[in-house]
Structure formats: structure tokens, C-alpha cells
Length: 148
Image (cartoon, rainbow, N blue to C red; front, side, top):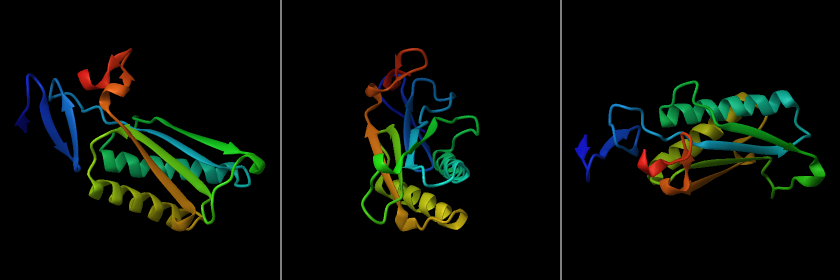
């Protein structure tokens, strides 16, 4: 662990960097996940994809099994269009700072798991990482994430 300005400590875990005032507490790195798809797919398929994505994100970010911010939105086919060959859109909102290698590994693990456990091919999955600075996150009852 490296000492950084004031009371902040830099933690390295699974190729990620988190800043915490108290290094003994878990780092705040839990992303918010939205999965969007047409309703031509059964609800069981949507739940399976939700569970796959959550498991891969949990492993990548070293989260507890109870750390879950995920939702699935299913649209009438008339209201949901993606360019071919995409069938599923996954948006992962997270605090900025992950390296390209971490992102590549995350994309690969999610698409591989979906391909292995569903009828979708990896080419059918569109993943978008929406990275925001920590000061854009209000957490734990209104605190700025960069100050926790």
C-alpha cells in the first residue's frame, strides 16, 4: 500500500485502484449495471443473463455476493432496436480509473460466459462502460464518493 495525500491510501485489488480515507474498510467500487433487451426473449433468458453478468462483474471487481446494483429492462420489439448482430445491450456505470487490460478482460469474461450459458453468441452482446469521476456519485446517504 502506498501513502497518498492526507489520509488517503491507494489500494490495489484485481487491477483496480480505489481511494479510501480508512484503508481497512472495503473500497467503494460497486458498479451500477443495466441490461436492455427485446421482450422476444423469455423472462428466464433475461434472468439468466442478469445472473451471468452479475457473477462476472462480482468476480472482476472482487465484490461481496450481496453487492448488487443491477436491473434488466425488456422492451416491446417495436421500441428496441440495435444494429445487427446485437441483441443485448449491457451498460456498466462505474467510477473512472480502470485500465484497458481490466476492461478487455471484463468484456471477454461477460461475452464468453453468455455464449457458454445461453443461446446468444458473443457477437450479439454490446457492452458499454460508462465511467464517471467519483465526485459524480452520491452514496451512503448523500456523501460524495470521492470523499468516502
